[in-house]
Length: 477
Ligand SMILES: *Cc1c(COP(=O)(O)O)cnc(C)c1O
Image (cartoon, rainbow, N blue to C red; front, side, top):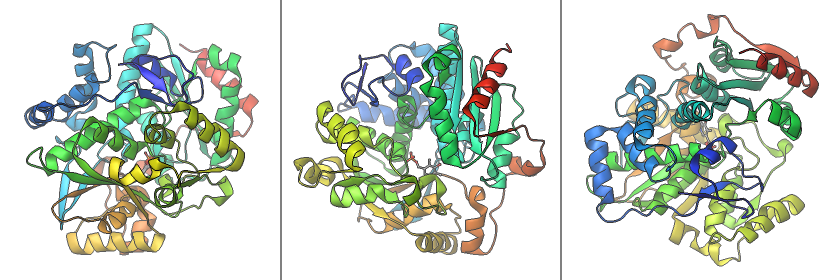
């Protein structure tokens, strides 16, 4: 399988190249040349693999359709190291919980940092170590985080040969739990840098370092952001696992409801559906930052400014633009890369929006691609958290609550709706307290987390200082 860019101006590349490169050189996002279509019998075989050999074996089967530059034996080993019951807290890896009335929760947050980002990031850690070892080279991952992504990246890369992580976070602006989760890591290859500023300052610093091509090359600066194709691919697997768990035969259909931010999670659902997984609807749920809901309702994609992006009680969905959305638009427009360039580097850059309402593609959104959407407010999140607690004794986090709320408005008789659960409530204890009057219980391994010694470098938002710090760390073996 070869990969092409949504902007059509980059050479086609094999999987491992795309893995390490992230963004294509023409500014586009990588996608496979075509989606492998499952034939009659394939789905039966995959169901059998999942049932008899489990999640890791299913992951191997799906990944092998997209990866032809890692041997089957090595890829199988990587999948079983990654999707291990001890790492994800259960043998099923993404267990299902039936809530009745056709609603099923699929838990994606059993990993080391209690958020669904682990599902993909853990695989990325093993793939990076493997590929860097094979090339006998190193990579210094530079990233900015306001929470979930940074900790998932650090837990995935800790102790991995050939990889260092430099993770910038806004000093004093994350929750005490989130800070402790990241800063308590003592691994020599993990560097936490608390920047005296806000998240945007952190992101600007990452951009400034990457803009210095000579520095970037000399210090082998890389990224693990949400547009990395390997992260998306890892996420395709749990759509299959959820489908097999919720159905008895491959004649049945299901819906998936997904709490959306950068459109990575639900884009993996779109890929699974294109492969032929019987998904009726993909239900995109947003919070008050409803860029995506607006598009699915009106055909207008209007990115927000930082100032227009609200800080909500589901912070990992507080986005101003959805960085993976270009992938879906590429498919929606029949893979016309010239139009993607017009829209994303033309209209969006010039006007801040584009409008597909009059385009025949917009009419096909639901019929051809299965997409519907909805939004959820703070009050509705609280009510949903309360409802699931009172009616089912199940505590959910505010991100998942957005998707449950929207899913309840799209229930269909005879078609189960799986809601992807993206974080554990303990990460957002304040909102849970507001909803339920009690704080969520803490998994054993996090008891006393805030009291552990922390390893963090506080730094002003100064790109020169940051570069000197990176260079100094890189002289050590
Ligand atoms: C990242 C994240 C999301 C949004 O996922 P996308 O792939 O960016 O759409 C939702 N919930 C939680 C808890 C997250 O960490």
